[in-house]
Amino acid sequence: MINMRYFVVAILIFSFLNASSQNIINISGIWKGSSEYLNETSAIVMEITQNENLVEGFIYGKSLNGKDSTKKAFSGVITGDKIEILETEYIYKTGIDCKAKLLLQYSRADGNESLTGKWSGDLRLSTCPPGVFGPVNVVRANGVQGNLPVVEITPSAAPVSTPKHVTASPPDEIGEILVAELSKRKYYALIIGINDYQDPEIQTLDNPINDATGLANVLTEKYAFGNEDLIFLENPGRADIIDALDELSDKATEKDNVLIFYAGHGIWNEKLNQGYWLPADASLDSKAQWLSNSTLRDYLGGIKSKHTLLISDACFSGGILKERSVEQSSKAMLELYKLPSRKAMTSGTMTTVPDESVFIKYLMKNLTENDSRLLSADQLFRNFKIAVIHNSPRGLVPQYGVIAFAGDEGGDFIFLKRD
View 1 (cartoon, rainbow, N blue to C red):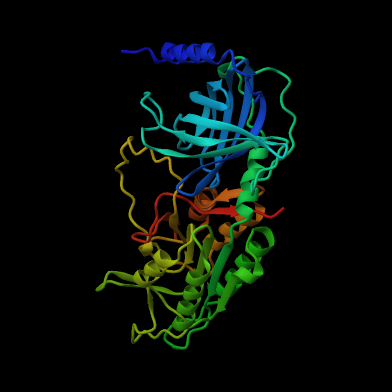
View 2: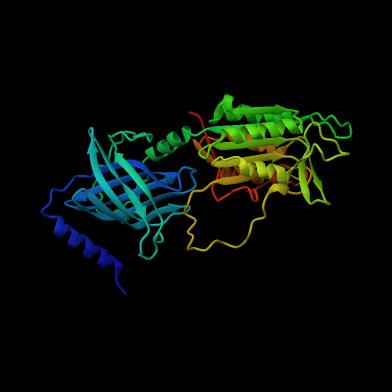
């Protein structure tokens, strides 16, 4: 068996000897930019130290959804204006990642220096599988990069001579890059609150419209939801809800985010094994104006957003969630891609819920008191789930999970907080 450590060293020495007579570019310093796979962007920062035509240092990375964060040591070689880098060791890893090979091209134009190329898998063990790849684009920290801002920073005075022994925190500018990228994406919201029903047999509610109003205010005042991008429906009929969903499907693009909130009555039909929202014009004598989970699921699958989050505070709202499997994906898949999501957050499972919602109380509390610029829906839910369980008189257990058959591919909705 080939000892890969010495094999890589041999490649570097051979490349050094071949390149020793060439003029060597200087790429020491801090480089910032992005890496992509299937149109999903991750921010990266490269801290490079160069000795002749050999380089080493660190690569910091963070996904736009905030779930995956890494710091990896690397070593590489410069040949002319080309750089080959192997990621060799994790300093830390949060979430899903793999060690890649980077093939980069150095260029200089209008005073700006850039390294562009691709990352890919190769035949080494414990690395990205062969055949996977994505573009890499970084610029020197004092340069200018297309639509990714470059923030001035002061590089460390200490040389990066032994990467595996250095445990410094990743530069703060990674978060700024993520925030800047997400700021270019639209955040749409459809907020529905129903207190009053035309059918006298359906009980009037006191709180849904107030809850919906409170959430709309938090989203537009504290998060990146513009007033012009928020649809608010007070006591809507079924046709009003369908029209609003059609409007969302016309507006949202594959880079945008969509949040849908519903507070009102829900009902479960045992014979059809189906859950329904009850719009304001619903009648208990006929399902004609009921809005079924299956219809809602079809709309959520048809809205071409990058991420869609449904928040439902209604009886039997958990019926829209797909049951989670205990089986895990093959490691060969590596689950390293940041993909579209269709998730739901509900106030309960297959149970009734009270008019005065503990679920909404703690959802709003956590959104209001959140200090982080980036907050994933999964993290938000985990922040308040236990509080709901402990403070619900009926022992409600809120749920968060995948909306079945709506196009979820493993991503997550991320809230972007305003400055």
